[in-house]
Length: 249
Length: 328
Image (tube, rainbow over all chains, first blue to last red):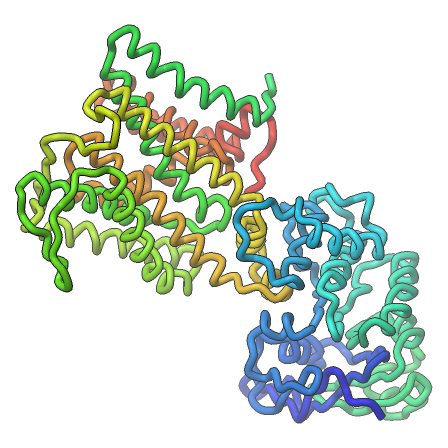
């Protein structure tokens, strides 16, 4: 059994009386897609924030490639190889598609303290950005302002920026959110191939995508992981049916 | 008529070259002084534009650096003209009348102060940032008023303009040449900075700090460095301004001046390379011509400002080029 790339160990987080994260220990192994599903308010986003930084758990650890990053800031975790995409696109709306991707490349190359040569004329940044845009199919839009992109294109760009980082692990918060059936299908195909590059922790509501992609699924209810297993195990688990899936699956 | 922004910028620079030369030929030194004033205010506002335009930090205390620049000039020149020693605590030195030395001191001091002000105020944002920078401005203002050694409320008069090697700075056109050259140099650096990786990251930090953190960059450090650079440029402008008037007083620290610098940028176009320049020219022209007509010229300035904010989001540059400003 190979060592996990990303893991949480007994994470706890409460907001007042509400236990948003209840003793969560999950891990992400090389080459896999581990999906986290659960009803609204189950604490998925809270969990993501504790993994990526930005929200400090009350107790518990987060490790990335064996290193404890629990006390590190968001940017240190990103540098250590965490590539995150957001549920609601977090992009520079006034900038062009290429500029957004170049920003990611700057993070990857740790190259923000350069004051002379224009960012867009630096081959090391530009190539990295162009490759990522090419892969998600946004090359033709490179000079479009992000504000003028369609919702679906913004989702693609969100993934492209994470790609520029060449991360060790992806953490994707509902990448399919708001995509049409066609877009969902395309992105599902893309993520399917991406797992070879770096494993993906995938929070997703689109059950078709989850059951197609996930090697393992964890079900989060009221902040607690009630089950972890393969797609088939989860589909047939009576607790999961009770708590979440109902008759859908 | 829509102009390409590059041509418009070229036109503005050409105008700033032609007008003083015309005034020189027509023997109107006052016009040269007026344009010099515009150029120096523009330089101060270009400094502010680094953080306001690219970084989205509305500093309502930038007069601090303008004033520090002014007092750096005033204090050094005062000790030089009175032949007294300047006691800095750890060592004693003579004053100086040399502009390059004064500029360096103005920029270094402003930069250091900007570092500490930035360190404290960048923890906040929005209205709180505006208020905390205003508070720093007022602190410096009242400090200068009570600083009896250097004139207190009355300020300091410097009898002879400081020297620049090879030039006669008392000739308005020669002093103008110095200011204009510095403005052009700083504009060039601003343009480079804006397009550089640092500029791109700073601009991104204005739009979404979360995104910047998520790619592994530190928005706080980016903003702090921008604040320091911004303070240094405004400090340089302050030293020139004091030299133009051969006088420095606490009004250089006043919050009105901080507000004016913001207004200059808004008139011209926030984040635009030449926004502060066109803003300063319009401001000085209005101040002069309307000020001749009525004491209440600020009312008309207010109306113009209102129109620009309501109808031309990209400022005058935005109106002339037909391109909406990037800043919504």
